[in-house]
Amino acid sequence: MMRMGFAALVLGYVMSQFYRACLAVLTPVLDQELGATSADLSLASGLWFLTFAFMQFPVGWSLDKFGPRLTASVLLAFGGGGGAAMFAVATSPLHVQIAMSLIGIGCAPVLMASYFIFARSYPPAMFATLGGFLIGVGTIGNLASASPLALAAEAFGWRESLWALAAITIIIAALIFIFVQDPERVSQEEGGTQDGFLTIFKIKALWFFAPLMFFSYASAAGLRGLWAGPYMQDIFGQDASGIGLVTLAMGAGMSIGSFIYGPLDRIFGSRKWVIIGGNFGTFMCLMALALVNDLSLFGATSLLALVGVFGMSFPLMMAHGRSFIPQHVMGRGVAMLNLCSISGVGTLQSASALAHQWGGATSVAASYQALFLFFALPLFVAALIYMAIPDSLD
Image (cartoon, helix red, strand yellow):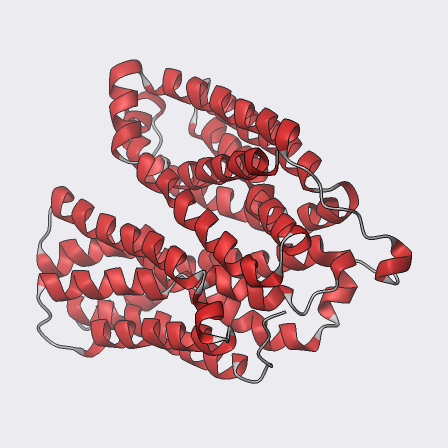
């Protein structure tokens, strides 16, 4: 039963990864049939991330109050399934934006429900490995949102494809409801006072932890989701096919990184120093992209792929962060850590355009130098701040 529940949550996370990246493939047909511009769809994508981020507060509370089974299944069914159904009947860009907001709400609890179960039901040494496996497999959804979705939309129609996705999402939500088992509840007496999120804000170690959580994943996600394509087009003259291969390499690197990070804390007997080493690797790759002149296409692609590998310390960071969180507020705690990470992605993706424009006043090459430095320098500072907290394998 536990394995079936874990499989259901993995499928739910695959759908979460799918939905966050699906708009790029549907852009031409949505433009043609609904008059949706790039700005309209950019807003729709941004709304997915915003609703996902802000839902971490109620999701964290609900995990502690009602457990992961009910939290994940209900929100995924009504938000994810209902949002996909609304997308399927959309007649304007506004409908797409509302639908993506609903889908963001539906996807918000899936990863944190899984992490809540890992934290409460498995030995601490297994947390990073399980989390890395979940994220690594979940990236299948990111890959499936490209060519497979395009082929389905072409063969059956985009509305029919969305109806199928709505049905699949609801079925997965039902599987979560049937098979996921809630961990044993921690009573108020066991956990102490139930002061909710205030307990999380009082944990001093997390204040040193939050900056790296904010910046660590943002560079890999921002470059993969927003800037790798323009960089390859502007600097190396790559067409859609070439860009697709580069982003595939970076996406594969992110998947591989998720699997690699998982067991490293047990291999090296440390979480803190593995995380510092990985983020220093990201920093060095970004600095090379910014400062090395005359990079070849192969060299730039390799560095982007390595940013993907090194930039996936999220599972190990979650494992380290959860070691400071009391059991009775574990849901709120893991949700707050996730909020730091996802808000970092959204914030830096938006602000990175300003760095790109600032550098572009000099030259095209300088615009990307400024961009890579924009991601690299705050990451380095955040890693220095993170070094102040103690290591932990609990």
